[in-house]
Length: 127
Image (cartoon, rainbow, N blue to C red; front, side):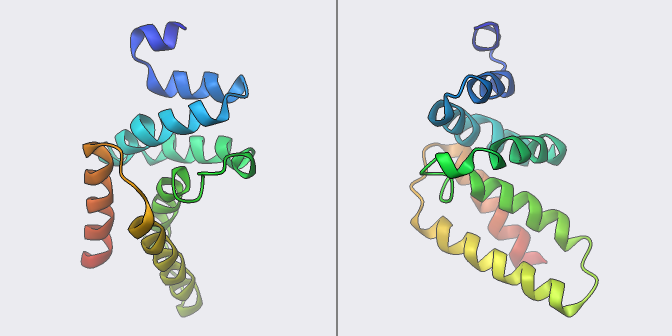
């Protein structure tokens, strides 16, 4: 409750996850936490939430076209900086294509999500 009163969206998301309110946690993550982490380059926080959601993602029907887009974006960004061989680059390209297909079919909820997804496309167009 304190997190909601203070506008601590990461705290609200953590609380919802801990309470088993997975759909609520997913909504807060997709609408607020994940876009904010991408815009502010806080990939450590995005990784932290990715690990938390990874434990329960199979119980969230909308995870693939929702929160997983953001966690995959984070992994792509990190892996692009660490490419060591052609095989790894092929894996990155396959993941990027998977993300692209999900982006094309995902309804966007707010302007922040639109901005983040635009940033995603720019990242791969310029890389």
